[in-house]
Image (cartoon, rainbow, N blue to C red; front, top):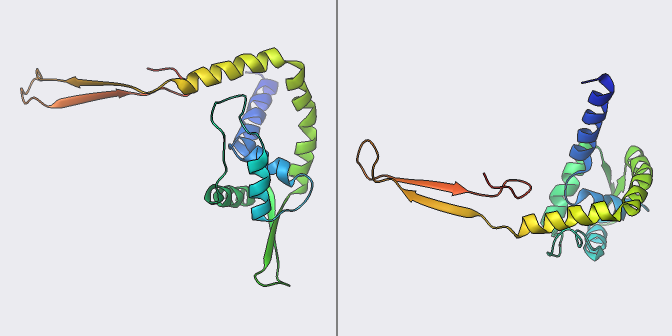
Length: 167
């Protein structure tokens, strides 16, 4: 692997690991125009049509998941949590760090790329919907002929792997 390949590969995985959580992109977009309280983030994100082309399910962000996601994003340095003690209870707002605000702006040309290649997205979305519709395959096998002759049960459970493959 060349140094350039290594750099690109590591960079892509770094971006995926930093921003790849299901709710992070929606929270980034919600905070793009400035600080918001948690309840405002929740209502804003839930007003978005997330994954509508990728799955038949409507994505709903619950407050407990939002709280965990905000905590994780804060610990990762993606967002800042500020508390204003002038009121009771203190008003808490969240905002993007300057570096993350920059990356959201830098992502816009990549987003335009997706608009220029609708056939690729359509094919990937169709595959995702098909894979999500597959259910777990369960094969239960009774092994009455085990060497000990004890009639123990062996259960073989096969579930779809990421991407829908079974194996």
